[in-house]
Image 1 (cartoon, rainbow, N blue to C red):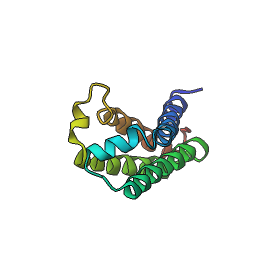
Image 2 (image 1 turned 90 degrees about the vertical axis):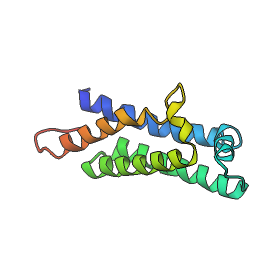
Image 3 (image 1 turned 60 degrees about the vertical axis):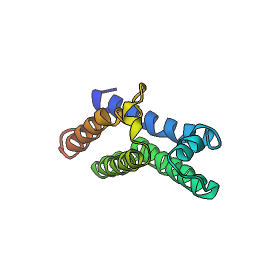
Image 4 (image 1 turned 60 degrees about the horizontal axis):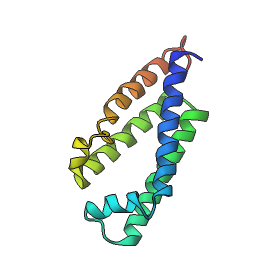
Length: 125
């Protein structure tokens, strides 16, 4: 397995694990995080959690089975949007010791690198 494949599969793991953890903690940490951010309506909370988990799962599967420059760029855009949303809902996540938002900085670098390398004809991911 080459370096780009390792990078891609690490992203697959991040997105699929995030989807699974979000659903697993549907009525636990996921809901508590949204409640702490001011989302009190259970139906809105449910929609946000399940919707976010579905997007994460689709991206993880796309990265796994259909890697392409377009998928990398969509993942980059979605991650950017989710990072902005999380920052608006709960800015203190940037200061969390486990880095739930700061981890996105190296993920941007990995996605950008994969997108650029995938567009070069002689290189495969």
